[in-house]
Amino acid sequence: MLIQNYNVIGVMSGTSLDGVDIAYINFKKNESWEYKILFAKTYRYDDFWKEKLEFSQDLKNNELNILNNEYTEFLASRINNFIQENSIKQIDLIGSHGHTIFHKPSLGYTFQIGNIQELANYIGRTVICDFRIGDVILGGQGAPLVPIGDLLLFKKHDICLNLGGFANISIKSKNEIIAYDICAVNTVFNFLSKKINLEFDNEGSNARKGKLIKDFYDKLEHLKYYNLNPPKSLGIEWVKSKVFPLLEHYSSYSIYDIMYSYLVHISKEIAKNLNQSNSVLITGGGAYNSFLIEQIRKHTKAELILPEKLLIEYKEAIIFGFLGVLKFRKEINCLKSVTGSKKDHSSGKIFYP
Image 1 (spheres, one colour):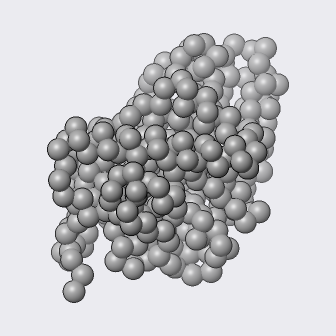
Image 2: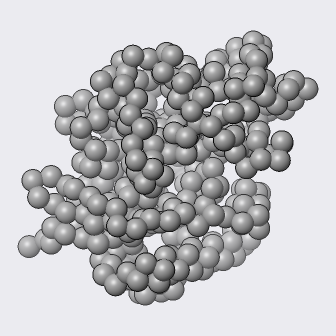
């Protein structure tokens, strides 16, 4: 008989390059799944790792292999630190996302570093990871992966909206769910903030100073991705090829005006996808961008719910831990209604030390 109680470490590193989010969570299966966050911490990337990861797409195959090994060792050291700092004794498994370098499902590939056997060896624990590639092989987008967690752990909300490097949304209808990426968020704001020697735009305070650049705004509105039907997903490649050239084209304008125009644009794009629903749970670093939240509220009647800090910051780490539990139980953790793959399936690789 399957056990119904798991103590798990969930690990997430996103495209906004904030750092590695690690959470220690208890999952319990009664009539439905429940979770409790026991400890959580973000290990910030220093300038060395930020630069390495930011320019990793330019590396050749042998250089990528070296980076993969180095990052795996780095990731293991942070997880080991987390275990020691919190005196954690009981760990059934570790569910880890790794860090995405390439994501081009239309070409049949996605690649995350830190998802190799050595991670389990360095930590001495069972690791479940590399959740995306199995879905891409089955013809899916390999993303988003969080919706199964939204469906089973956050049932009371009609919509779950994550505002991280990208905005991704899960929309529930009866016992089904559809999910997709809406637009780029902190991948763009952090890039612009760097130009004024900041890591990020705190509470949207710099965007708030700006004025609309109408021509720039209009060009953003006509990006083809927005008109695609789901399943669909975004990667940093899209931002670099579609959004960054527009930012460059309008670089003679005030950085505040560029930030303001981009924020107004995405607030409307996000609001369009909220379907006037009753309850929208908002998590991710963008939840702290009060100006963005204000602007979204202007364009929707949906109730926008900002939960406690732990859930805002660690929801994705929680869910990657949960994906590991489902894989361990040989249960479905990847939905064809979300990714467009040939079938619902249990994705991920299990590595034992």
